[in-house]
Length: 504
Image 1 (spheres, rainbow, N blue to C red):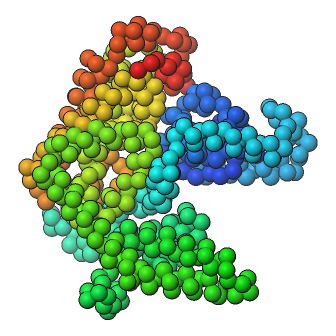
Image 2: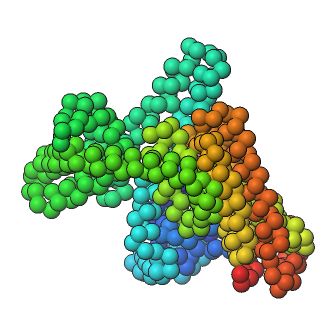
Image 3: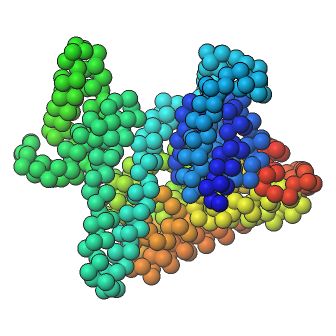
């Protein structure tokens, strides 16, 4: 039955994004189905938003449909299968497909031209070289998140068993399971980096594997001995980027008859030597600096640092740039076993939840918007903020700002206790909200760690609620919004905010 439901969701989405012939690529992240389309004009945005399973849509380089964690991983394969089936059927029955098409027939070249024009217009609104680079870096790490979450939870379970003295025979096995991936994460980063930047993926992985090879301890460079893992994921990222450039240089200059032998050899040799005698030292210094700075920042300016980080994280999520922080989180996990930043950044989601609840009570007659909030709040409590951002606070304007205020307050609370000596973090990245509790770890003990994190969430909820309730609406906004824009709206299919934009 579950498979039927996921396939039904995919089948409902496909015609609303222009059908199989309009799809050029399909992928997904933690919460979003990401598709590239030839012609954006064929995408029916409002009808997509009205689907019960769709929590929101985001227009970027790819068209992103927010389905939520778990659901997106199950719907995506069904969507890909339907796209493949549609193309096969269209090839077998071209006349029938043409007759059934809801839009006038156009050539593939015309579709490509129209899609390119719309895509360029979208890029001009929200794209800079820096943002685009950060998104590409995020694309390297997003596929690694499931393994980071799984291994992080197992590591937390293993730590609990160790502290309690339970099942001692199982502890080494869990340690191996949780640590195996992290010990080789540089290889996966190198592989994905080369793939993302247009090189041969396995060559990027091969060069990055040098970083974790135990034999590097025998190498003496500049009077120092290397250590396995020195430079971590940042070194792997840099090494793979270099490998891509060397490979592209070789492809242009090496004769085709020798390419299969010379290009991979030179790519690994040149990039490997530069990695061993340069990048590992440089990336190691940068990694150490990140860890030192994060520790210093929270130890000396904990409350203020938490306020800034918690307050600014929602805008990063809105722009889709929050994934670019993954390399920093991963570096901190490699160094200390957890990232101290994630619990503070998670407070932004708490502010968003508090703001959404305030909107719910301030607009008692807007059934459409209240239904949207009720359907999105469970995901919000679990740390998935996109449905509330794109479906509630951002379209309304002021509540988005007051949600940031709640996040800042929660971040300041957690940062203050970090400054007072109750430092802790997350053993993995990905979840936040209540879903982060199983991943918490710190030197002050689990009791204090859980209490401070729970306190931070409570502060974020309360301040986000209060700021939105008292300052989130003007009189004009209340007059325009506190009505039922669609008396027939009884389900999430009639999400209201997107249909009733109001100036902030």
